[in-house]
Image (cartoon, rainbow, N blue to C red; front, side, top):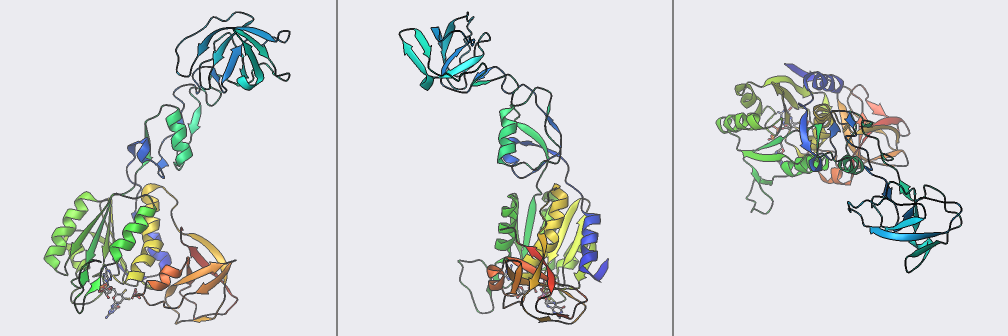
Length: 395
Ligand SMILES: Nc1nc2c(c(=O)[nH]1)N[C@H]1C(S)=C(S)[C@@H](COP(=O)(O)OP(=O)(O)OC[C@H]3O[C@@H](n4cnc5c(N)ncnc54)[C@H](O)[C@@H]3O)O[C@H]1N2
Ligand code: MOO
């Protein structure tokens, strides 16, 4: 196992150890936000029949005629067909099948009808007006969507319009969040001296939900190796991704590393030259991915954005990494060389303002921030006005 490595090496190890999840066949209504794992070809013509796009009258267009005899009516969904003769029209409605012999639909606002006689009052009417021809949206057998397309409302609707009910996608992982700590109480409970409210599972679950990852189960364990090991082995059975909060440091009650070892997890690295989140732990067990997130609340969220997101991106073939931009720092920042600093910050017009309260137990600065400012490992001083990299939050 690697100990205390650079941010760059940590990301490289994650990239080398995480694989995309097996392709799954998914009901369309559950596929929003997922990536298509197959090319989609139209199984039928859309529309499958010549279709009226207006409420009005359908007929075979005749330049020398302005009157037609109305011989019937076709509503949307009607199976009725008409053998229209020259000079005959049918009353028709939006979405209805236009008779084969007809080629034009006159909208009713441009028609004058008396008893069964239709008079065209549209001087600019052309052959083919208001008629959607067979396959004019997409022809049967044509490629409709490429493998790799991210499904969104429009693509989901497009698939449904072709009659497709299920698609092959890269699924979202099922996620187990394991919260450790004797001191933790749930919001809403009474707090005794020495106890703190548990917030990490709330942060993590919300961050996952924001990615449309909703198959999330929260487990809780005391700082007890046996309990932790038993729970962890169950969690590893049923989840693709396991996020453990706390217990990754060096204290006498930090059992995460031992429990992972007992569960035969391959620890890939432990500790990154970074602040916050130095004791981040990453491991795998077969295709399962495990992160031991340092318990301090700001460390948990920073590590989620910087390391768990890229892993989820690989598992799902989605581009979910925080967007990177170069921006100008508006103040001087000093630190010791040797650690990358991820600083809660706000950007506006490509200028970056650092939040006060960078300590890893504080979430208030995170709550005010819209990005993380990156101060590189080897830097000891960034001047005000210098350009730095910024990772933008996805909201
Ligand atoms: N001697 C050393 N001590 C520590 C080191 C070190 O290098 N040497 N590293 C520090 C750093 S940096 C971090 S980060 C933490 C990480 O500690 P753990 O991952 O073992 O986390 P815990 O000790 O369980 O908790 C840390 C802190 O966070 C609070 N916490 C934990 N879980 C939650 C939760 N679900 N919701 C809200 N708050 C939570 C916990 O009460 C502690 O205050 O270790 C340092 N120590
Ligand atoms: O690495 Mo820790 O998150 O600074 O307190």
